[in-house]
Image (tube, rainbow, N blue to C red; front, top):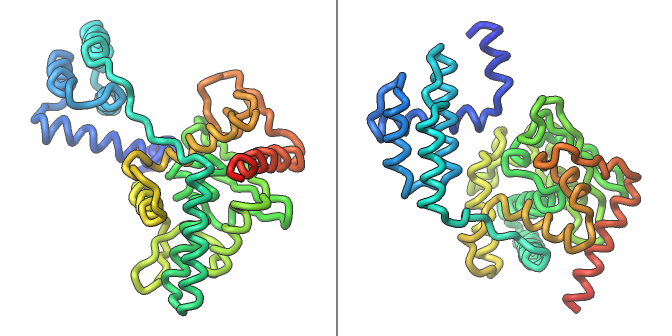
Length: 318
């Protein structure tokens, strides 16, 4: 691979590269399609899977096929009137609501956190170092994932050296790239210290216990308590979260995914009076191009907003 190819590859997220490769394999190996493909062949491919795949999945497969043809120097067979009309027809015939992850609300977060805290205490008393390490990691993972609205791949790519903690104030997390960072310029995310369910305290406890000073913040742990040097895979977040929820006694765990943390925080923030533009800026959504940078506010003001929402939740529970 030459330098040009290296830079071109670096411009695209690893997850996108892998998912596109998977889509091409599906076209060639499962459907037995030939590449380069004609527009008619792609139309038949879409029609064959129109009833079994979601609209988002079909559009993703189409994007992968488009990219393959352009990368190989062929004309793009996906940009035809036939394909556009076919997609419109598929949407009309198979117009079903999109399956969305169930939001993990504050009540569920509190329930899981209590369960994790109890198990950390129990495993410490029993001298079960492996369980203590695992529960401490999971507690940090779910609290930071919720309060920062991070995606699973963002949690997986977070490194210890790119997290800065300021006692009693909060923490900053720098990511060199994310889905919302189209220009790969990197971004620093703030997260305040809280009086309860605190992601800052949980992160500090985890990294101290695991003796982590650099490298991936969240890593795999084997049954003997040996810590991996590699980051957890983003796809491992869903079974990990569902297992936590199930053991904590939360029903219908299959309705939750890694997006549940992000959606749960968004729901909490809106219920707590956050302005939609402020929320979009904080979470990193790019749907509104004129997204206001409301979070360029003093850290004390940001912390106050979190605390107000937490107090509302406590009053309702009491």
